[in-house]
Amino acid sequence: MVTPPAAHTLVATDLDGTLLRSDDTVSPRSRAALARATSAGARHLIVTGRPVPGIRALLADLGYDGLVVCGQGAQLYDAGSGRLLRSVTLDRELADTALGKIEAEVGPVSAAVDQDGTDGRTLTEPGYLMPHPSLPAQRAGLRSELWAAPVIKVLIRHPELTDDELAAAARGAVGDLASVTMAGPGTVELAPYGVDKGTGISLAAGMLDLDPAGAVAFGDMPNDLPMFRLCGHGVAMGNAHPALRAEADEITGSNEEDGVASVLERLFG
Image (cartoon, rainbow, N blue to C red; front, side):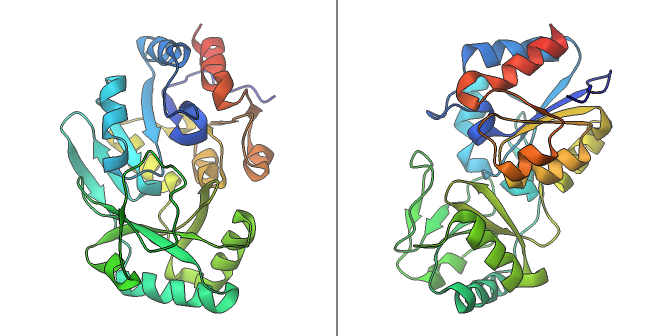
């Protein structure tokens, strides 16, 4: 295990598969560990693939009023004021072209989009099943309806390919039309090119006047790789994807085992 930096000024946590248990709750132990870290002077920064509308209830439950990196880095949200400080949209014509290129390689996929804005909707075309049934989504009748309003990302699923296979094929097909990442089981996503959790953390840390080199980052999926590469110490969950485990400085317990809490208790205990 690599020793983390002495000054832990920032604690960056992913949500799904990391801080959240499978029932979308944060355990009392994790809440206490985060409170201990913040009382010791560290800032907690939530970094998630979810768009703003998909996290507001959770933020209220946690009493969280800081900055949040949302939508794989496409959005920077101020929970205290309820304002979007930054939002990068995915050009809809490029997104539609990217889907066509992917389907030319692998056959039909089903798609969904996260719309821009603090009240943006998640729209799904027929055949797309949301990986998180608890997240609100509305069914669109036709793919063309997905492009009715600005979007921050596109989610795709394939009836036969694994997530790794689909992500690799999509990455090869779209080139610089979009950034492709895997954010969780059944969650391959297209984001604006060059936008990821690393760019989101960089912006947030700058606004907080903090150096990401002093950050301890927790994650579980390949979409957390840019965050690990920017932050001083990357902690992969016990349930993490092999690609993230391979680049982690440390591996902790799973999200069901309060893996985040166990590390924070050691660092701030």
